[in-house]
Length: 403
Image (cartoon, rainbow, N blue to C red; front, side):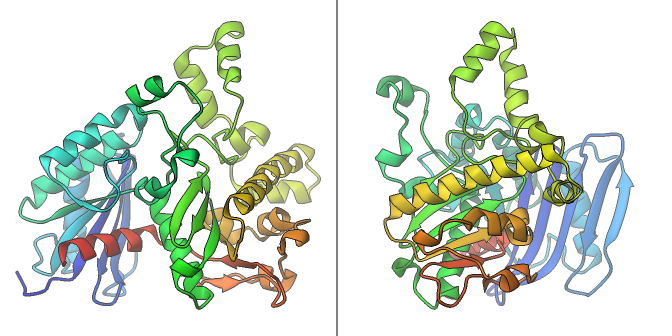
């Protein structure tokens, strides 16, 4: 192994997919990116782009039986570009792990004890943690000599005070079943809040930011001086904002009502709230571009879905403004937040008394760099800050293994 290996492979293992990026932390450069999807299906797909060599994207479709086969296929693609997993330049593999509970508040070198704790958290993250564990086990098998690091979606939110994290239910029941607000998208909220401070020319400790991570999954956070003090997702990623297919906030009695009066099973209600609600439940589409196209064509159902989406978003902006007391910036990020100018405009419309406004021309500009879209005279900055969860995971992983 070289004296100071600087490359980090980031793995994001889903139930039937593996997203990956290889980065060189000497300069933050991306050497390769890719995605394996439909793992275990009749026809799987691997898309690999060798950025280090400037080569074209390579796509293959063939059966990939499981995550081990997927990672072996990724290793072959990397090796073809001279970037194989056996490279002495590889310092570590960083894994996205969705749920770390209260135990994991920072990136952690993976041991058997760490994996056991991630497994114990499966009941509160049944869709995510099992897939994350599979990715970890597979990577360990391929490179047992290499440090493997878990970076947890929930870690950034562990700074929340108990007044924000606890639900108002019986304490003994809550503690026995680990019921509390954990929050998710933590790597994104951490990265974007820090980049927003940089955009303002300030240290994160000097800045209060409301981060709006708006993708198919969506969450908001209130960040005071670089530390999360509240976030919209809770025990699971279902709570909070209206999302692509998730309901977000809902009266808990709706679940009881559907069980008692509609005869729906727990699994049916779970599917309804997680997969058939949100924008797709309201108007049949969860792509904001298509929803805006339908609105422009006069579709009233799409218009109502958009209004409900924005209404919830505006409520959280107001709530987190109150939580923080003083707000220096609001940052929009992720697919919708970075690209949907009408969402950004509508979210702050009517909030001039709070010092919020967007400049129409600045808001219409598209770009890959952090930028302000508020007028120069605005009391509170409104920013678009592209998120980079893979870079955040790689940065945290490399800082840990190179310390």
